[in-house]
Image 1 (cartoon, protein in one colour):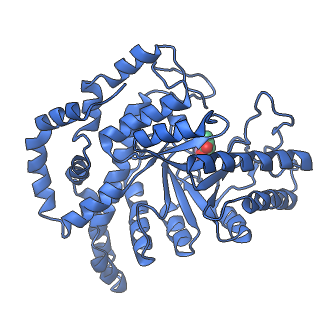
Image 2 (cartoon, rainbow, N blue to C red; image 1 turned 45 degrees about the horizontal axis):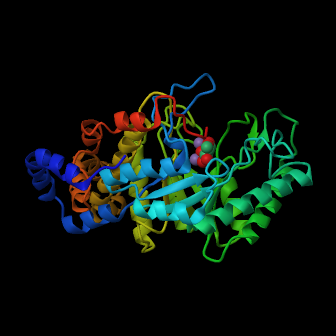
Image 3 (cartoon, protein in one colour; image 1 turned 180 degrees about the vertical axis):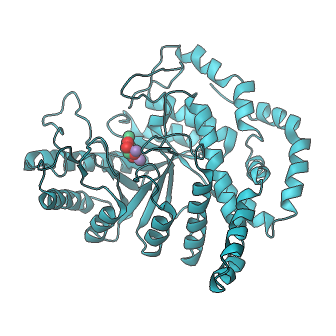
Length: 424
Ligand code: RM4
Ligand code: MN
Ligand code: MN
């Protein structure tokens, strides 16, 4: 399915008068509106290839139809999102779910859709049909050297695909760990994992980064070999300057202060990238901003402040990605909501009066500090985000346009009701 620009601009006309009224109001309160708008235009969030189909739980899956059946169709879907919101200009692939049969063609198709390839993801948490050795008891931590070697070789293969596609980073998330006390020697598991990661690190091209993603628990329930930011940081430190920690918002124990983690990792130059999602309990992978938008704002506030302190480029110096998927919404509508929530939190963080906040901190004026943060958080910045979309040729109201142009219905017509995406 193609979304023609003229249809989007036609629909934009319908919403323009109301948008302008709301935009002028917020714009009059912002110091450097054009600067803020430019930052919003530049900010792109990568879409994971595995979130385009209905996510399943271990109890079942309820696909809604028209899901992408191939890598080409996944790229087309993200192209549709990007056409609408102008903020989803990248795709993150998971190997072996998304092995490109012809890298040149895939690259060309992505370029036609205005997309680049973000981090590549390896998968040593599942056994594949033709795989020789099993990951049942771990991959990079495994007691058997041959299993570790297989996991390392898989990661090197993923890098190779990434190079062909023009990606420049690898995300390693390991499900390695143990489900019962006594199952594992923690030190040996760490050492084995480190050695395996070192071999992968040695295979990284000059301009590549490797992201070590941590997760508190699941699928293992007693210990996880990369379970928190401290452990990820330890691996990154031991690996070298191309290794960074990746923060997935759903991978913490309840009530963890994620914004503080982010702030310190950034200060130590070890924060590499993000997986955005929201959660009530743990790795729920719910729509970004659907449960706790204030936390998301506080995280962005640390990001903006911390990146500015190091004069980093907000758009390009960290890897920004969504990692969400669930059972009940149309995946594309869900992703539009997630991207919007990220853009809103980022815009709010750009509006924080950092100078006054610093003064309040120096004066120990706790009340004022809270007022400053909440003034930014409670501002309705949606018209700023919409204006940035409009500037880039996107839709003022992406979700409404998605429905008005019957995108899902068209995809079902093209691909059928039974089309199910490959992945989790
Ligand atoms: C994990 C983790 C990884 C993702 C897999 C599918 O929980 O979040 O980033 O690649 O799920
Ligand atoms: Mn993740
Ligand atoms: Mn996860």
